[in-house]
Image (cartoon, rainbow, N blue to C red; front, side):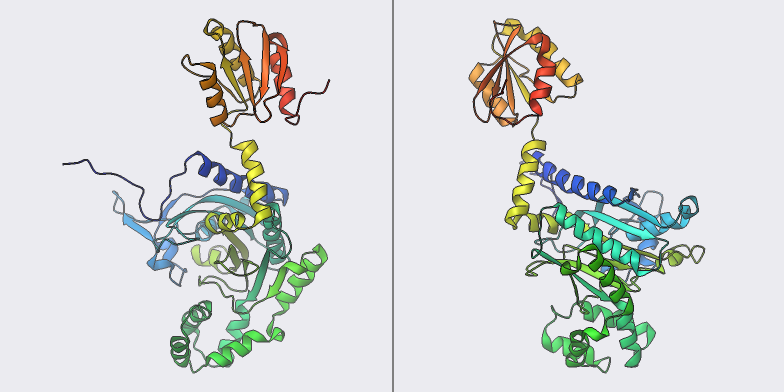
Length: 431
């Protein structure tokens, strides 16, 4: 019987070197923007008590959990999102930090849902939150960070839009139309899928609440239904020069039940794919998670790696920026040492060691090989330079692999010479 051929599970990914490099580009951009805006990094466990997510998640999340019993008999879940874990963490440690807490996290999440474009069962998220500030300035600060993140990836005005809404406006709508409080989560789930639902099914679902699609769409269409919080956020973003990136869209309600106020989603301008990012205010979640022991207003958003990568690759200028980064940061080494004379291998080994200890990424062939084959290895490693160590040692040659130009140097100054050369363009060295 043939041995089984193993592959990764549906919705899970292997990261070969280029894929890992793209992931690092996303992570480094996220981290740089968050730190630039004054956020501190934290981390929570990938595995949590299942009750944490059943406490107040709502929507489809409870049916998408990777949930199992561990060897200790505990009901545990691979985290499907990070906000509940953050609420638990903040409730435990918030006394140790001045308010507001401005925190971010980059990590894996897991949801058992159908894999498709922009969605997998395992994914990475950039999570950014502000806890301890109830005013709209915190919401505006988060939306501004979402805009800064998109700009950092190379997107420009016209490539994306932030659609902002307010669940409180919908709570007021539900109250005016006589909906019972316990029926509101189900009603909001219908609004969340408004544009994706088949017309007849939508009509039937809304009829169960004594409502019609026309009444709902009329509410969405009128800007005067925007809350005071939205107006304050818009004024704040206008002062930052970001008003052009934002628009009111009351059809946005977000699927999780813990949202309490302003919510928003980031879309590509043509809305040709699912939301790039989304979040909002969740003022009661920390109190719910802590059993009322800690009452901490909060707002946050998350951006997943699937959709943002798709959008980068489908937007020419953003894709070009990523490729430039990959060319400089995804190479296996900066300098590949070519051993043109095997009797000089000890000298080549010492050069590689000296370069590495000076912070230069350097490599060499582990076994004797013909010089052309070594140059092929240098090309495959995506090194910028090939340093040739031959019978002329301590005289050295440095070949610029992109242009095939050569420069001469000496082993006694090789480290400083090459380190300096890496800071310059790849054209011929100008004396």
